[in-house]
Length: 140
Image (cartoon, rainbow, N blue to C red; front, side, top):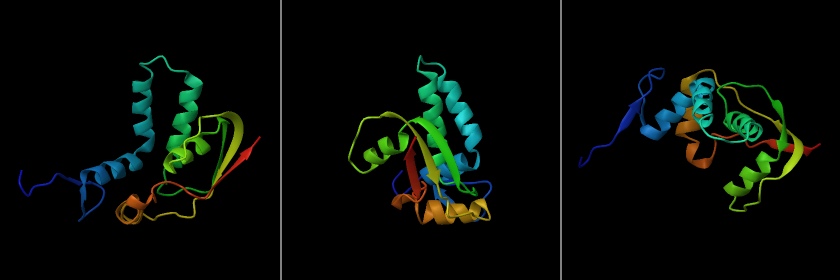
């Protein structure tokens, strides 16, 4: 294996060969609903509070920058955004049950999967550009 690496060719993107983790991310984003349906069938094997999991899955599914999406609001029983932001910023705080509205400004729509892949994954993944960042949480 000296001098070799594993690469990934996305069937929907011509002329670019990706590192495996980037290629798999692109495939996942392009089929996000299917990905979360498959994850849900796995999670259902465990005895986990369905309310927690449903909200967590909604948060995780919608925090990833989409190829094209209008601004949107989501309503939660738990403050998922504060919880995960704390972890990302090395400032852990426990998950708190408090009703809130998370308003997301998307600021971008890409004309194609290729444009998304180049701008979000290729140029921006290591800098966190794959997640929405213009988010306001309002306690209800």
